[in-house]
Amino acid sequence: MAKRKEDRNNNGNIHPERIFKQPNDLYNAFIEYKEHLKQESANWPKVQYVGKDGMRVTDSPVLPLVMDGFEVFCYSRYGVIEQYFKNQKGYYDDFVPICSHIRKEIRTNQITGGMLNQFNPSITQRLNNLEEKTATNNKVQIEGISTEELEKGLQD
Image 1 (cartoon, rainbow, N blue to C red):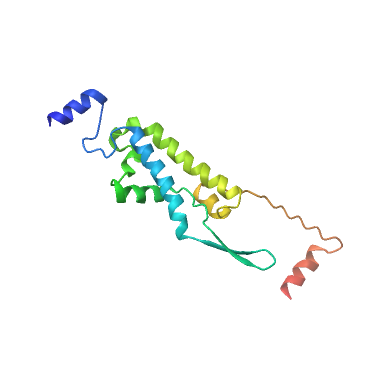
Image 2 (cartoon, rainbow, N blue to C red):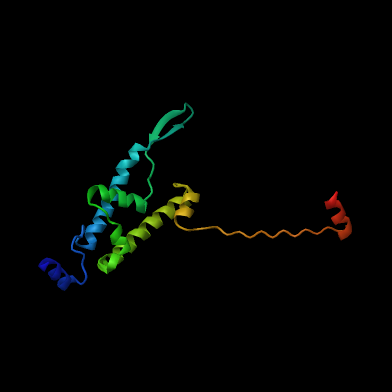
């Protein structure tokens, strides 16, 4: 109990069982996640046949940053990190800026990848609550037909 009181006195309302002590520790885990994705991309080879002879070329795709993927990555190495992003009971106030930055970096990666067709644009739009709004107005004018003739035609 003494340690908990000491933590609160030095740094406000701190959760006693933090995985990451400082915001930079969480960001370092995010950097590890990005490096992990580069290695993981080898598990998703993209095969292409190029040139006049159709030479087989294998390439590793760029994998998108995904919040759920970051949480899964951290769970296997550090534990559950969801509470940092939800800031449960204000215990993680000092992590709010870095969590916001991580979310925005993930979103920017997905949107840019979608715009460049590296990632599926439709899925990218849905993941980021983006929508394309189009309005279609159809006006039909029929000349030379009376309303009675039109109604009679519908009844037949």
